[in-house]
Picture 1 (cartoon, rainbow, N blue to C red):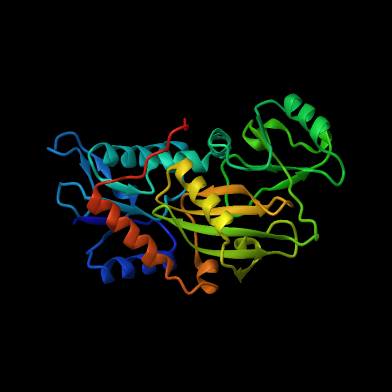
Picture 2: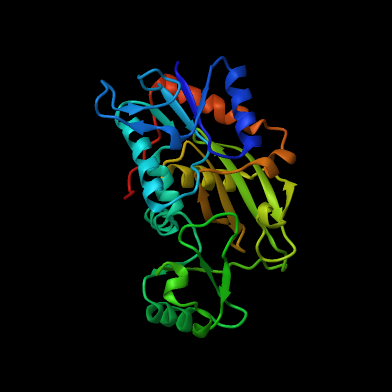
Length: 304
């Protein structure tokens, strides 16, 4: 098999995946999506470094480097072109687009009847203010999240309409989600890592404030997901179409869980500290099995 590992950053994760793929008998070619070109004078116009004018059988995508809207659009276009040509891509471009856009993630979770905090997505500040006035109050805030954002950056608690920032500071999209507080007052939520349709590991994320992301100082603690959490995470991964993903959950106060986030390019250095499962090996094994079967994960019925 001709295998590519597309990783623009993240040395630790890149090294772990390279080692795991090699141990499983693959000979991965490391490349950056930024170095892929389109040249229509060649028999195959999509030129991927290291593959001599042909295309890889599979591409394991770790990260897409940040950049302009144009650069990001081109790199997603490259992934779409690979999939259209028969290359198995994990995670595929459609899954990335669905998960990066929090509004689409929420829409898909709702269409699949998966429990998630009540969410409101609006383009105008006056409409968002009406929602806040109706749904929020001191002690019962809504969470304002960047539509495109990760690792807990840019989150705000909104209790009154006047606390909403102007439209230009939120990209003219207000993504508001009901804040789910724990009954015991602890700042804690959960991450479940799903690979090839199966929950393989989990952790508690504990913080000194309401934002618990490990990147923002949250502490990873060992946790074996109970069946109801594992099944919910697996269903959320299928709803978005991810081959591997980190699913963030919160307790609903009634013995169950709700889905907060679906991450199509998850980091797992914190999780790896508290689980005996070799996450990189799970990802590599699941990906290579998908390449052998010729299957890129698809959105399950009921999606957009």
